[in-house]
Figure (cartoon, rainbow over the protein chains, first blue to last red):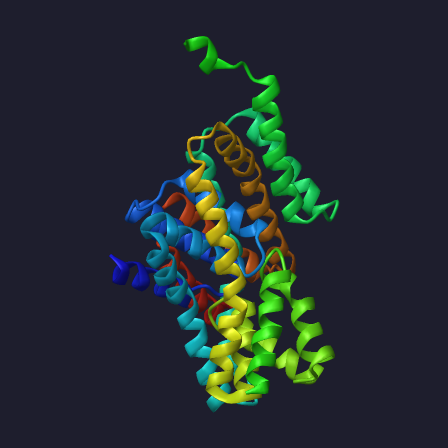
Length: 183
Length: 173
């Protein structure tokens, strides 16, 4: 189990080009859809908490998903898997190509991969959106988050925190207290 | 030994105080390695960013490994990389145990419902930010449209999609 987690995250780490968000579509495919180790909602929790915490989002997400699947050892296996491809590649580059010279063909490959990352992330958002329970409240909250971060320059930490606080206030004081009525 | 401790402390600070991941971590890295410690020059730093763009993995990890190697060899790169990951590990461990411990409390359920409702918006913003700097010509928009269609509607594997995008880059540019 640990070895298979490590291998899966090694694969994820090896194809995470262009920042942590590039791993979202790959984790969604491998861990949520294929292996069904966690649910869509749990993966969303992992991403949100990873964004609200310090450090690289890709590493934070792997740690949370690892804990969720296989506790502390799972977290270690996933973190090592995510980090090692990057560590090994950079070490090789640092040792052998100290003054990095880019080749024309590599430039072209990356000119193709960069826009693909955008498409992959949006495809993951689309898939998760079709699978989650859609309500006007959630649509409104997502749009508010887009406006806050993109146009008002508010940090994602505050958006995640306000989402949590508003939801607690709403459920505590405004939503119908169903559980009490049932008893 | 002194250099190893400096590396560890610097990258621990970078890991602990930069929020938002990715490019949001750059100002913090820049301050520590160029302004405070003068380990590299601005030109070398830009080289590192180019390498980070072209190699897999989070940019903070790439910078830590490269800088660590340059300052103190392989031991340096291991120490710097460990330093940048450790704060994540500590914070995420606390969060996970907190959520697990109070799982039955309605408050945890409400908090998670609240953050779930904003996170898709946040991911979309991240995609738009990348789009602004990458959709520079008609080919890149074309590649994005084709791959979005394949992955979202035809259930194409994202890893094959990245490889296909590289091939399309060579053909189209």
